[in-house]
Length: 160
Image (cartoon, rainbow, N blue to C red; front, side, top):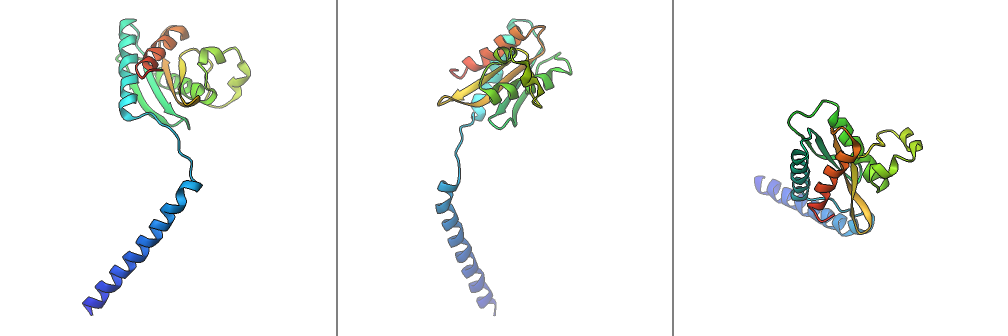
């Protein structure tokens, strides 16, 4: 009896294995591959941006989001204010959404009606193959131009 149960269980696994293989074979035509920044790249961006913030004596938060706007990394610098995290995330979201620096987008205030956007300098897109794949946002400096310079330092760390 135990032998039959074991044989039946193994047969069931073989069937499931076959189904999985068939599903995997069909997956490529039904899926889309997207580029994302590696964990190492995220850390390089954040490190370079934080070093630039320290060099400029700024207390900021750095946010990096993926193409879908999902947060991948937040680094809240020592002494950064409570508003800086949301500001940084929204700048990163805006930059990746439109594929442009937020300082460029600030001229089009109609975009401010789109939920989650923030049209202040400090967000830059990360592109691969001509398409945005991530956004870097910095919040906390007294001006968007300073935030953007810090974000650009992060982008340069990965060859952007």
